[in-house]
Length: 297
Ligand code: KIV
Image: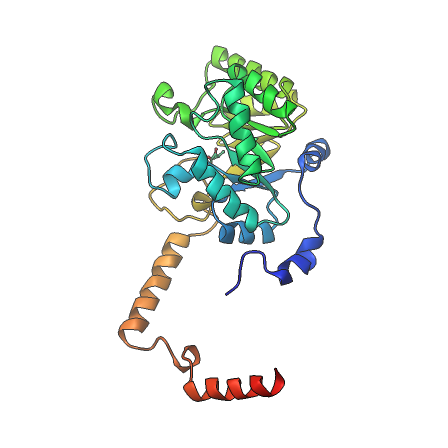
């Protein structure tokens, strides 16, 4: 069986590629190079996306919805994010691995936030953490970054506040709301964050925030002017045909392709076409192999 990081892979050409770090991402912003980020929740997907050249892998609390089947991200625990972060780390060589701070793992106090961020780094192997909120969580961002842990902010449509927002609604539409988001963005940068996710806000506001900040902005439903983009991997691959909001583009239709593969498998099992002789172990061959091993070993 192959494992996500086989020795062959580590010593191959991809292993020579330089790891994406905070300075790499800041440099990309300065040079105007767009940053590509996707979510990942397990080692196999992490390995594929890393081999594909993704810059950042986010172990998002979206796993509560797309992996666990909850209706929102609120039930996700810190232990669950740690578990998935460990798996993603095992599959990743180049991309920066960012762990999301789940609901109630940081809101209570900056001290709690630092304790949780420390666990994500120490136990999960995260290289950075992400938390939702504006000026009110600036002290939390400050304390975590002071401990040497890079923090990615997240403002605009913040899914952990779904009940307060009254649903997943575009934020920052009025002048007053836009001004609040500009202030929030500045507060998060001033507190020491190295990047900022802008979710569900008008493209013109995202462009304004991006121009204002010296740290990269990563957009999701925030238009093309951000320094980078992020999507949930299952959305990007078209794995749920029922979920196609305006901001999502399906770069494949894996739902259909997996259904087709599943039907093919069922058909061949029913007709005994699978497993074919080439998938079946042959007793005599095993005996011959054993004899050969005996001679050489
Ligand atoms: O949890 C998540 O996947 C996220 C991204 C969509 C930004 O926060």
